[in-house]
Image (tube, rainbow, N blue to C red; front, side, top):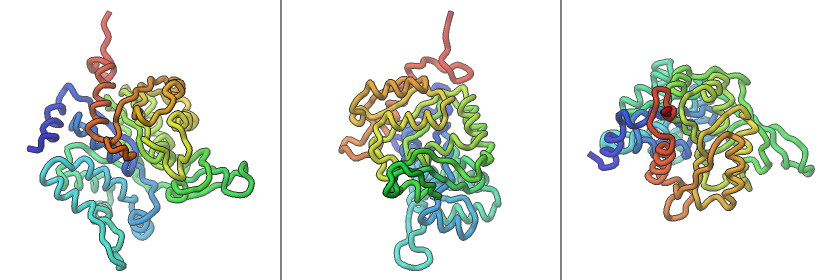
Amino acid sequence: MNPSNTRAVALGRADAPRAVALGGGHGLYATLSALRLITEAVTAVVTVADDGGSSGRLRGELGVLPPGDLRMALTALANGNPTGTRWSELFQHRFAGTGALAGHAVGNLLLAGLIDLTGDPVAALDEACRLLEVRGRVLPMSEEPLVIEAEVVGLGSDPDAVSRIRGQVAVASTPGRVRRVWLQPAEPKACHQAVDAVLGAELVLLGPGSWFTSVLPHLMVPELRRALLETPARRVVVLNLAPQPGETAGFSPEQHLDVLCQHAPELRIDAVLADSGAVPVPERLQRSASALGARAVLAPIGEPDGSPRHNPAALAEAVRSVLAEFGPWGTAGRKETTG
């Protein structure tokens, strides 16, 4: 057995929490890669608003959920066991050339086919989990494809003029400054299995990832938002290692938290986890974390080569240390107290 998988199995018992990670793309991939080193009881709740590349094409042609972020989450949880790793390599394989399949990832096509065959995105994802030997679960935040819209300033000659742009790709790549985002339809129905997972979790991680298009959208699905407010789980926000060109260009670490607070002022967080080398002024981050009821925790969670990517083993260790500070798990996932 793979040593990292042995570690995951050893920790996947009563001493490890039921964990839920919310996000999309490479950020969620990093979180899931870390969580699977802590516990086998991992559920990914994935954004479904992508409208670019292979996902956008399949969404437009077939009307299915955009499969790309779902595929990434599946492969993150599949890596580490021999069969799952081979299948995850196939899922990630992307066709080259100039024909009809050019640019499509095999996993995107398989997921689209499973959704079309079953008529049920959750059943299709559960089937994909069995194929990949995933011990956790991957769920969409909603079972309908969603559209992200944004209010942006700085697109014209007047720097204060407000423009509205539509679509995840447009928002993620805008040269303007995003002020707020929302979803269409305005109050989408949540995937009820995702809501149940959040309510039954002992640990919930939000971020890292594209802040406006992968992280915040989860808070705009009313049932999921309520679940995040009501869950007894420890809520941990994981910050990005660097601003994202376009979407959060020029953002400081604390600005990411300020935006989160603006979009969900009633949300309370237990800890904000950030890379110690990516926070120029820790005191400012602590003040912004305090506005969410949280404590800022700095740790070396990036890759040693300095690239803006989270190191799964380091992130897992940092999350484990944060959890240890809360003490033994009670029946509701909160720290047990005495006296």
